[in-house]
Length: 595
Image (tube, rainbow, N blue to C red):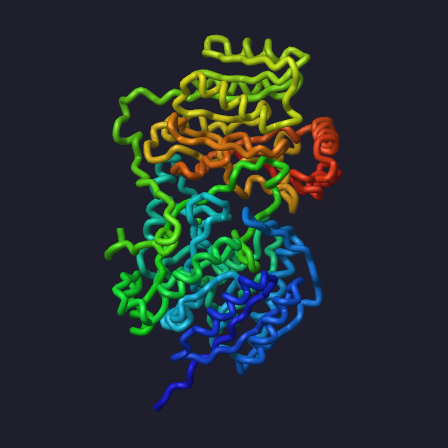
């Protein structure tokens, strides 16, 4: 007796550039449909008529396409660096996805496949995911969320984007977190199906899951950013496990420059690739759910690594970034690791991630140099900050940028007994931040540093940093560590809203100095970054240790900063105008800090 084919509804909310959308739609046409029928549900949210025209042409060519206009035209800012989101956009897209869930439910589809419009799929993807027989399963893809950083997957294990395994309540040191982080990412380089805590953007959802009540509605007592996180938390609460498949990684066209990879991806995922002698990740499923069909044996495997944000300073990068095409950002098995597709077309020089601290515990700890710029900090946080730093630094290099108070005296008093190189500018250079940061770097390098910790006079680490910094300094496979920075709005709370989300990204603060590395600088007069702009060419890692930014924690400081930015950048040429305006909000959303 012949089986009735499964029915799949492919849904995608679309706000996309025409050149990327064209590749996305062509990828959908190439999908193998040997064990299912495929209908389409597109919500056209484009502000480019050329993109809307491409959708209409697709609907004319495919037999079953439901094309719906969103009826709105919101601004969505994206460039070749990153993509900027706000809460209104997030929950608008969540509403679109919920409409797709409802249509799949009412018309009794066996599966809903939700996909972002900047992904290219291997032709065998949907067919293979159906064979996995999971209620919720995503196909993996890997992205450089910021230029010149490592590739990072769209799946994670717990919380907002923690990519290591941990039991509830388990307390882990930084060294153990690092080990588990690398184990998790290494595992995802091997073909298989793995249970995860969070996923999105390329997800097959079964009818069982839909009828159980999955949705993208916000969970009111959860403050996590992004509709996919709320979807995943609700699914877990309903008892539905989440899985990622790694046999057929998609290609993410996150920025225009990624279009250069399309030709190689199409060649490597074509049926002819096998006859050309290409080695593939596809093969027997290590989870025991069967193998992909013979025609689908070509797959583009991933590169695994953490990808921190660039240090573009608070006022230019606190906006939320998400993958394009409405993606959510949202990070030894048997068999041979696959050769990464992205590495084949864009080598990244991945580090080996060995743990140097455990190899030679008796070796003298590498020298840590504090590098800082100060100006008129006497009545602010300088004493508190330096008293914390002296617990773990070996020396300090401080540029006083024209202070007229007792800032210099405080530096000398609080760092007494610690080697201090103090350079005093008679004329302030702050109006040209690039010049000031270059001076800071050059003076720091004169001290022959091993590791440089670059912090401002209103930034300090959480208490555990003092006991864990040695592990970081002994990590021989890494030259750069990135951390999350929290903008405090009073003594005990940090701000979190559409304009203030610095703590959702990782920024570089701790760097090993390499004498022969050709450092280059961003020459913007404001928001140029405190470190050279090409440092992500060095092997780098994320750290779970957090930084408190106290500079916004008093109303008078906020007013002072607001006036300064209005004076130095009145047209928001280097920052974000809406964020400048939000500085003086009277009732922002604040979150209690837990040490």
